[in-house]
Image (cartoon, rainbow, N blue to C red; front, side):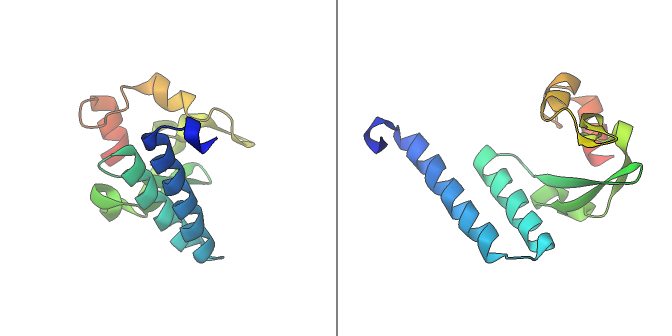
Length: 120
């Protein structure tokens, strides 16, 4: 099977295996796991930053963030106005990723509404 994979696919798989190892090393330290996830997500996507938002009551809260978004850890946004909030319902995640794709271009620097939702 490895012979059928491109060099890029092999690199991505190695990256994912390394990420699993880093998450495992974080053990039960949830904050550390979220920091690993944001750093690795930013790296593999080539994004300027990455954020983990968690639902808390009526809000989505930035619980971990990397790079340019790191100063926003703790930021509370109303669920309806946050980037990932529209994907949440009373029972948890109801629309993964599709809410993001429908709302804007995916580039906060170029999409005014997305920028306001990401950085306030």
